[in-house]
Each structure stands twice: as C-alpha cells, then as structure tokens.
Image (cartoon, rainbow, N blue to C red; front, side):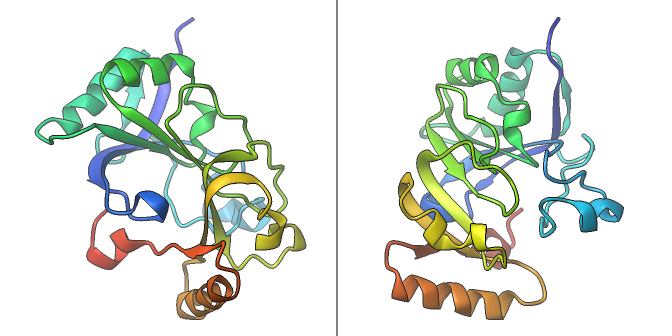
Length: 214
C-alpha cells in the first residue's frame, strides 16, 4: 500500500535560523505533530505549548497530499527551478519524522537535493539525511541524541529542558533560540546572556521574521 504524504506548505526561501542561516532552500512543512494537535483548544493540554507554527491540514502555499515519494520530490524540484547551486530542502513541521521516510529521502536525493530535517527529537532519524537539527521539548522523550545542530528554544521552565542537560550530546553546533511571543525581548536578552557565559552555545535569531520572509 502506497503512502500518502500530507504537506501543509512548501516554498522557496532562505533558512532563517541556526547554523544554515541565509542559505537558499525549499521549505517542506509536513502536516501533523506528535506533541500538539495544532488546535488552540488543545494547547493547554499539549506536551509542547509554545509552538508558533500552523501545521494543520494541507491548505497552505503549495500544500497538498502526494501519493508517492517521486511526485512529492518532483513538486519540490519545481519550486527550486530557476535557482543555481546545490538544491537544499528543509523538512519541517509539525514533526516531519512522522512522514519523512527512506523512500522519500531517496527520491529527494535522486532529484538532486541535499536533505535537512528540523525535528523535536522524539523519533529516530532515518539514514541518508545530510543535516539533522534537533529542537528538544520539555516533557518529551529525546530519542535522537546526535546530529549536526541542537537548537533549544529558551527559556523553558522545566528542569529537564535546561541547556546544561544537552551540552554533552553529540552535536556540532549548539544554539539557544529565544522563545517567541510577548516576552521575546526579555527572552532574547536572557539567551544572549547565557551564550556569553557559556560560549559552547550560540544565539539563533529568527532572521526570516526580521526581514519579512516566510
């Protein structure tokens, strides 16, 4: 039985966060998450309560349901068309590893893409990924404990979500990203102060929001 891939949206942009900031990419946002339904009425009961992303349904820009890895890869290839250089796709969500599987990774590689993922780390990443960014969440099991980049939303009040809990994990880069919302200025100052005190960590800002990119 063939798999259906549910995509909220997909679009060409620049990566706005973390170690790949400024790199041209196609963003592939899968629908669905295992830490929150995406419905506001469920937020207070969700494992992750601070998500700022709409990942519900398939009604976003270039979204839809795709009945084969090749069809989804071709869809993304069309979005990259016209750009030069190494094609790069960032698989995000929601939680992309609910859907991103070995056949889709293979199809994306055949289409010429480097493949990156931004995951909450509760599901082991399949083989073949070129870039793994893990963003741990309090009260959620951390299964994917190695990769290229650990990006922690900061601050989270829970003891198990403090930066020191992750500092010894096997990642190349460690970032603190200020929690968005009404306290963004205070959170940014707190994250910057932590990075100054503990230089293993670097500050990640959502630059795409600062310059008006999606």
